Structures are given as C-alpha cells and as structure tokens.
Amino acid sequence: MTILSTFDAHNPDTALTVTDDPAEIGKLLENKGIRFERWLTQDLPAGAAPEQILEAYSAEIAKLKSESGFQTADVVSLNPDNLQKKAFRQKFLDEHTHSEDEVRFFVRGQGIFYLHLGSQVFAVQCQKNDLISVPKGTKHWFDMGPEPEFTCIRLFTNPEGWVADFTGEDIAGRLPRFEALEGVAL
Image (cartoon, rainbow, N blue to C red; front, side):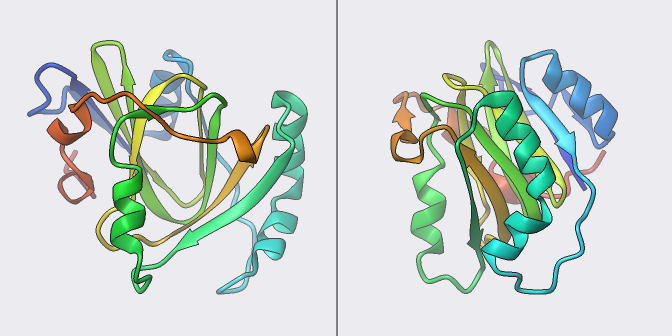
C-alpha cells in the first residue's frame, strides 16, 4: 500500500499527516510540484528481463519521454540476497539533489522517497505501480530498507550526468527510517 507521511523538518518525531488515499497523495504532492501517478499493472512473467519490462511499459515511457524530454530508460532491481545491499542502501540515505529530475516507476517491491520541501519532509512509501518524479534541485533521499526488494524503471535526460550532490545536512538521520515507516498505521 502506498503511504504518504508528512513531518515537520524541525520536529520530526511525529507524523503530521498520514494517508494511503492515492488521490489525496497525488494532490498533496502535486501542490508541492511533485509528479505522482499510479500506472496499470502490465502482465509480466516472474523474473522478467529488463527488455521485457521496458517493452511492457513502452507506451507510458514514450509519453514521459515526449512530455519531459527524457532520452533513455533503464531498469534497476535489487533483492534481499544481494551481497552489496547494505552499501547500496547507504549510498542514498543522505540528503542530496540532482541536476535533472529523478523519475522512478515501481514495477515491483517498494521504497521510501523522503522529500525535504521547505519546513516539511514528505515520506512517500512507493509500491508496485507507483510513479514518482522528483524535480531537479529538490532535496531528498531514498530508503530501500534493510532487505531491499524492488524493480524500477528509471528515466534520464543524461544518465552520465545523474550524480547525487549531497547537501551535508543531517536531516535524513533525524527522520524515521524505512523500518519505522513500513506499513505505518493510519
């Protein structure tokens, strides 16, 4: 289930808002300039290859490319049995920005995008069928959890230029991590 929790960046101990209503999540994020959509599930075999995934979602990918100028799309997957999972998780846990939009569509699994928007942090627990687009320059971080399991389609205007620019702020360490928010009670 997709869940949005909002926090006061200066007092992050308790969520201000928690909702699992996709329409409300979409509206709250849209008001902050964040694109959020739910795509229909495509019929894919278990363990589908990246090429199969990209083909299954080719119409949606083409639409995003046309609308936003993306040049390429790829597929990234991570499973709990990956020996590098701890390092992969740590790589994205600190607040950072990018010089282009960060677009992810969850084909399977889940992860939490934390968006530091002014004096609030929006924690978006994305699930299968969720698309999120974090605009360039937006302070954020991503928590895939201690046992990551996801497959995402990523879109880029320039994959070589997609580099995290870390802010050096400690806010990511003050917010509840994946384990605390996963399936949070509404």
